[in-house]
Image (cartoon, rainbow, N blue to C red; front, side):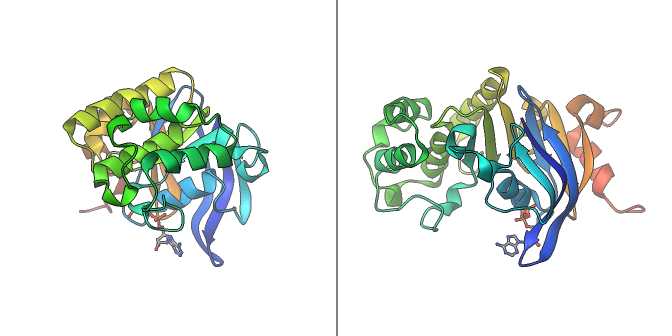
Length: 240
Ligand SMILES: Nc1ncnc2c1ncn2[C@@H]1O[C@H](COP(=O)(O)OP(=O)(O)OP(=O)(O)O)[C@@H](O)[C@H]1O
């Protein structure tokens, strides 16, 4: 289970999230929605311990993520395929297999899981190619593999669909649903309403760094025609 309690989080003393309280329960697939700049990625970074709240708390299975002795076995994270070449992404000169083996060793995970995860994400045939030569969809699959590596009970994804082809989208849909159905807490930031409508248990809407809605998908859509309409009605300023 992942939660925040009255969390205020920002950069260089400038708050982006204010007094955010929410829970992603075990066995739940929860989507995080919000405009560009609403604070979704900031929230996900805080939940995996990359940013610390200046007020309030962030808890993963009841403990701040940075206090877990082996955080990689508690929370699996993929914050975006565009991180390739960045300080937090894979080394582009490494192969996909080498990247995952390095992550497994660093995170205290059985390195033998690497081959199984490569098969699971459909990268087995490309495992020995350099990440620099991967397509966007392949980098996305590599990031998803990294998040699955330790079989953690909590999983976070930031826009995991970007770059996937239609087979990949359908595969990911089943994977995400399966992770939650196996009892994991799954938290995903997305702008893709169709995907959210198909798989979400719950939706949380952030607006200007505050929780604007937190409801089951059914409650959220309510009497609206669909999720998109319900969302636009919620975040559109009155009179527009
Ligand atoms: N590393 C950073 N340093 C300073 N400010 C940042 C940093 N990352 C994000 N911000 C700022 O925090 C605010 C929220 O950004 P964030 O990336 O969390 O939004 P988001 O909801 O994920 O947006 P998007 O939908 O575009 O991905 C924005 O004003 C952004 O400029």
